[in-house]
Length: 69
Image (cartoon, rainbow, N blue to C red; front, side, top):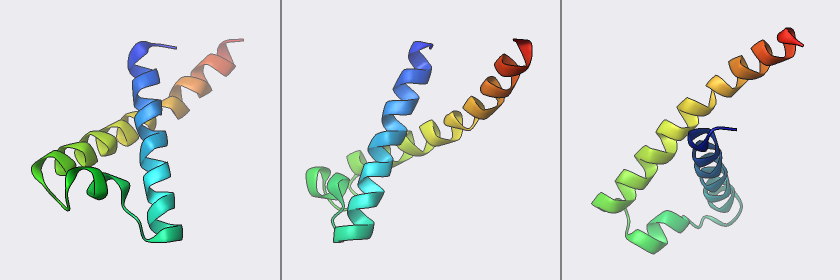
């Protein structure tokens, strides 16, 4: 796995955990750590969102590698 893939996957997992905390406990970990919609928290949300969009490419990579075998 490429380094960029691992970073993206870690960020997507962090985002999923944060959404789980919001859904179950109404607790936004990013906002608690960095402030409610502060510049830093907005950058974190944006980076996690970009990682999620990048992670969509994992489906295509998996499809092509399975067909090559």
